Image (cartoon, rainbow, N blue to C red):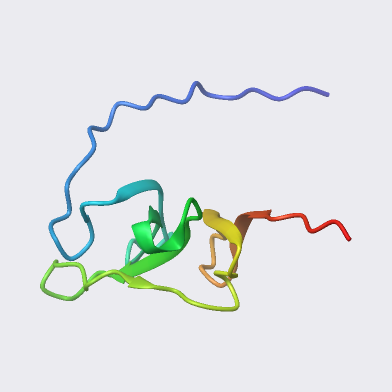
Length: 105
């Protein structure tokens, strides 16, 4: 048994979503929910050392995004770097990537 896979083409240009979403800080890994109404971004704010956090913004009925907010705990854990990798098709579950500081002792 085999399967065929269509080639993946990344031809979209980055889009600045304005000051409610984009900031002066480094931002990576934008992930949008299947319904297109929730946007997760990974941001490196300077007050968090070299650790990143998940921030979330919601699409309003007027087509504008809400001010991105730090999603907080339990998803963002002090001393770790966290990002959203994907959202399930039903929009109820997110797959996270985490890097935790290892403590020996």
